[in-house]
Image (cartoon, rainbow, N blue to C red):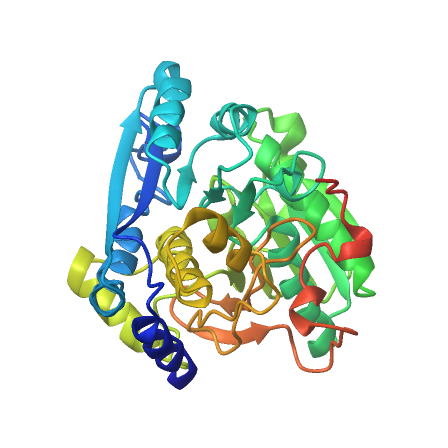
Length: 385
């Protein structure tokens, strides 16, 4: 914090202080299925999601002191467009030359945005955790504040290894998201020396001949494991798994102990203050998506401080600099990996109402940065920008 304000003082004292306006654009689509109520046949609504605009707005509030000190105005433009109008909305946003466009888009929208990226554009993904955007489909114009699926599963695998729960039973759903997350779990298990003793899929069926695929006790029978690693992205069946397995075993993954970017109960490193400020603004608890939106604004404002300017080229260079050091309220300062644009960050391992551990877990080392034990390291990455 002292270093942040010292840098701020030096900029104020400089005659080459920043430009008058630092613009940030939030871009989403109307009627996005991701934000529709996740209702099931009984009318229950599971895992409802909120757009991360309140997290972004909180980040913008935090720029007020900085803006006054630098003599500039941080401005947020919130854009919601139809899927058909997305290309035009992106061109309009690019024409205003913002510091960055924050992408809250489905995968098809991400593809559209990146296809129209110019050499001076910068997009920050604040939603999509898919490894494809940090791998085969990465782009030089794209940074990410949410952790990838691989980072989340690596964090959980480290904890299991440290606890000595090395025999893992993977239980997963059949959706596309389930398939991707289950594959990340398998990679993490191999990476950290866990043994997958079985790997089974849950199936929604009323066929009595296939009860062993839909009944949790039957589906988990005949397996000797230390832990059940559950993958259920939509929450369709996973809520019925804890306390219902054939043998008494802890459940981790989509239920039980879950890897998270953020949690409303985190009690260290200034997190309670961030949670309280968000609660006063939004009248609800801060989620992972809210935190990713807040973090995007935070890294941009810190890059302005480091660059000593709101000039786009200078800010973009500062964002990608190894010298960038951003307080993420998780105990370790973060910056972006130069090979895939991912924000380095600790991962919280939490139940529904408590943070149990933080990864990287003590004992897991890296030759350069311990945070790079989470997710694809440089040599492992498929990103070729």
